[in-house]
Amino acid sequence: MKKLSWLILSVVLPVLAGAQDIKIPPEVEKLSAKAKETVEVTMDGPMLRWASKFLSADDPEEKKCAQLVANLKGIYVRSYEFEDEGGYTQAEVEALRSQMRGPGWRRVVGVRERDGDNVDVFFRLENEKMAGIVVIAAEPKELTFVNIVGPIELDQLADLGGEFGVPKLDPKSLPQAQKGDRK
Amino acid sequence: MTVNDDNRMEDALRDALCRREAPEGFAERVLARVEKRSFSRRADLHLGSWLGMFRQPLLRWTALAAVSTALIVGGIEYRQLQREPAEGEVAKQQLILALRIASSKLQLAKSKVQHSQDQNENQEEKE
Amino acid sequence: MAEPLSAEKAAEKARRIAETDFAEIVRRHQAMVYSLALHFLADPAAAEELAQDVFLQLHANLGKLKSEDHVRFWLRKVTSHRCIDSKRRRMPPQMSLDEGPEPAVPSRTDDPLLSRRLRQLVASLPEKPRMIVILRYQEDMSAEDIAEVLAMPVATVKSHLQRSLALLREKVTRTIGEVTI
Image (cartoon, rainbow over all chains, first blue to last red; front, side, top):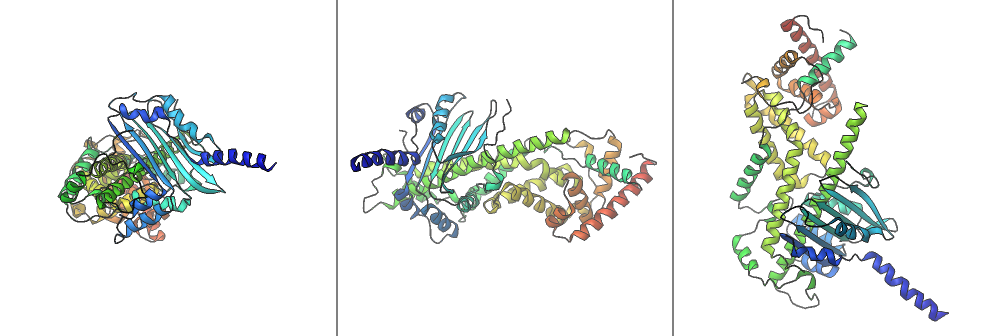
């Protein structure tokens, strides 16, 4: 019985851990070959803390930034800018979105525009607290995926907004799965 | 003076003072002035200024540009005990860029939601 | 995997993104800012210059603003104060407002003569009542919101509004004659 319990645990734990990890689908990674410009940032916790050491402690705003980043477990960005429209397919976008269908994820913004920008914002919650945020922006000539991982309070996210021009995301003002479907 | 007269007066004022479109090319002219001002500045600017936080002395950029392009930020062996300061500066700028992109896309999402809500409100008013 | 960006290219990319974002903010609010200045100054060229100055100032202060509502409040406040402080307030209108740009929204009434006269009369009001009337009827703001933007007591705003409306009504009636409005 013990052995069986251990086996179950060893299966469940990786799944739970996997629920936190988001993998960039290989078909999305390959977009860099077609893109006019690619930004790929992959920074896990230790990397973030190391990079933040170079933020100036004398600058009050950089200092605040360093404090914010200290609470994050990772920042992952993939951004592909194309010369023309049609640089990526809906299947590739869907491959990204499907990553957030697991437990703990909630889509708080979903905008679909015909011939325009499609934007999704997902929150990851653990014990009713923010544990991460994903933004997927599918614009005519650009596809962007942002994943910020960490036990961030919404106030901290708002602080992120204040320092870098991100509008404060007031949880009260963000309805569930808002759609601006103009189809 | 009746309430109806007041209401008609107010409607007339709303009509007379309704918003006008800005002249053609207004945004571009603003940006041109911003660019001109930013280019001529040499002072340190805080992170709070959208463009200012990316301004660095030219000499420093020259040194950073010389950093090997084989440097892969995410794959850096962070267990190394010593790092070149230049590598750290690269990582810092990557971090700032990542946050800038996150900022930009969150703003995009919010503006889309706001626009959608405004449209819904206008539709309800018409009905 | 793509080659990572150098620090310089990363900074340049970030700068371009910031520029694009700022351009979007300008486009979203330019009609409001320009119209406030235009209705106050009654001079399209002066209005554009003032509006540009406002956005330049916004650019320098954007990091301090926390939300879209905050941006809108800030723009109304700064535009209003710049208009009131403007040296042009003592000069008569330079050109007819009808020579300016098209309205951003369709007209509710079909009396361009009355509209033109009302704009001229509003532009002749003293500075603070003028801005109060413009904020009220261009932006549909409440007296409380106007008071906050102009840093005035609410009672003062209401008093100015009431007197301005009475004055405008009297002048419109006098100059156009019996106008059924």
